[in-house]
Image 1: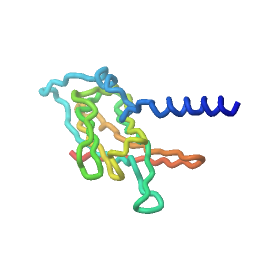
Image 2: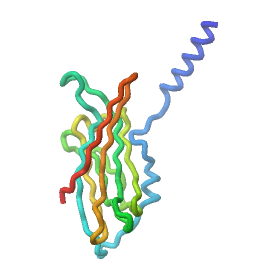
Image 3: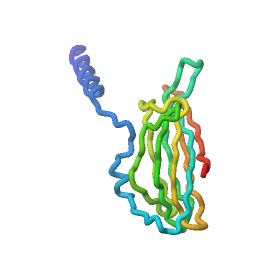
Image 4: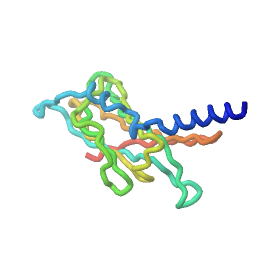
Length: 169
């Protein structure tokens, strides 16, 4: 009986270790479904925003870090207008680009939200990672809102906090 239980445990462990893990939980096909071609001559207003993200934080000392899952929330705050996100680029602690999430503008319908997930195992960003977003909105439309929600759970302890983007252009 003990051998059977040990064998089943070993097989379960083997399959769990072979599981392929994506770097980002958002499938690139989702961006293709929302892509849109924006005419450069449109009367849209351009903006650029910065958002701090933490894929790791220091814990107990400078040498010990805790990994975090980060959800980057891209929100259209207008209840009337569609907005366009031109760029979502992720940078590490040193300001080096890690990845761009889409190559063509995407749209967000009124009050719509989409997100980017940075998995807990993706620590490329380090303790000072960040995003730059470029966007366009119709004249007199409210700006989009960019938020980072970081969390981690270990045992019975949980940690979570948020950051908000700021307009830089």
